[in-house]
Structures are given as C-alpha cells and as structure tokens.
Image (cartoon, rainbow, N blue to C red):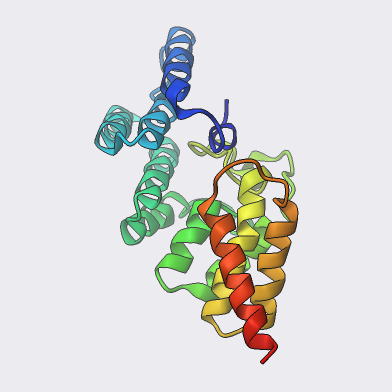
Length: 218
C-alpha cells in the first residue's frame, strides 16, 4: 500500500488495512521507529480524525528523537505532509526546509513541498518544482530519489504528477499567464477525462478553464 493507492480508496477500510500493515512491520522491525504508523495516521486523517492522526505522527517524532539526524529529518518530512494536508502551509514549509537541508540539491521533486511553496507565495519556485514533477523519472538512486523519506511514495509518479498540471494552471493563472494556465488545466483534464471519482481539482479545473477560454474569446 502506498499513499498513491490511498488517494482513491474506500476510507472505511483504510485504517484497518494500515493498522494490520503496521503490526506486521513492528514484528519484523524492532528497531524501526515508524513501523507503518505514518500510514495509519494517514488513514485516520482521511477519515476525518485529524487530531488522532497528528498524535500518531507526534508519537513517531518523539520515539525517533534518539535516532540519527537523517532519520529525524525524514520523520520531519512526514509530519510536514500532514501539516500541508491540514492547510498549515507555513509551518509545513519550515519542516520541509529542515528535512531537505542535507539532501542533494538535484533531488527528486516533492509534491507537498511544491504545494507549500505555492500556498506561501513562492510561486516561481513552486512552478519550477511542479514542472519537474510532470517529467521526473525515478533514477534508482537513493541520494537523488529520496526514497528513504517518510511517505515518499507520493512523488513524481501517478497522481502527484497529474495533479502537478492542475497546480501549474493555478500558479500561471495567479501570475496572469492565462494561455499557460489554459494549457495546464487542459492537460490535467485530458489525463483524467475518464475519472470515475469525485475530485475538487477536476471540478475547479473545468470551471477555471471555461472562465479563461471565455475571457480569451472576448
């Protein structure tokens, strides 16, 4: 199970699956501070239990306090994802910056980091990261792929790469680059034209695209 798998799952079974996964990991990984608890927290969060989710995350952070610096940074990255999902973008960005201090500057693009950049007014930097998300291919090298980061599965593949086009549309529209915004919204909708799930981004992209095309035709 990955974070991408959870994007469209039935959330009623999500916590149960994650808890079972966590128990099995704990049996096999006595020295692993996480043992799937971030996934369990994600399940609780998606089911609307944000306070319980954050307690699980904070427990992991507490248990990891004796760990190596790179482990603490990896767990900080995981907590930043939850803060971003809650809309606490400024605090999340601070944690992302802390987590990424020791990584290679040419590392893989990170979806929630890019989103925090956009939401905190760092639009040019966000555009750069979202653009990289649409083209990034895993290199099979931990130094660049950052596959040791908590919940790293939600990166430049699958859903994250598709959503990057939507957020590029938002970013370009904010900067007044309407033609670029239209292209990105259209690309996003073309990829998910057969989507059989509810999506706020899809609804918004349709609305924004209609509005921008009407303005362009005046």
